[in-house]
Length: 71
Image 1 (cartoon, rainbow, N blue to C red):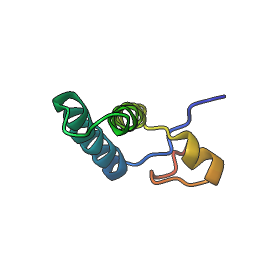
Image 2: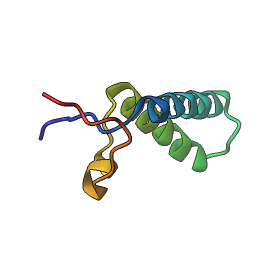
Image 3: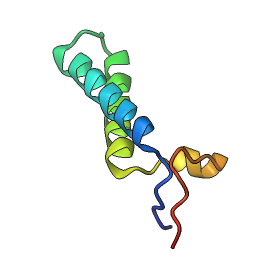
C-alpha cells in the first residue's frame, strides 16, 4: 500500500495542533483512566497522520483535502 498524501496543509496543521493538545491533556493527567488512554491513542494518531500527510480513513472514504499532484 502506497502512502499517497491525502491530507492538505490546513488539515495537517489542525491535526498536529489537536494531537499536541491531546498529548498535553494525557501527560498532565487531566482526564481520568480509562478515558485517558483513549486520549493518548488519539493524540498519537493525530500527530502521526499530521506528520505523514496520510490518513487511512480518508483513503477508505475517498476523501482528499490536498491539491492533486500532477506528475
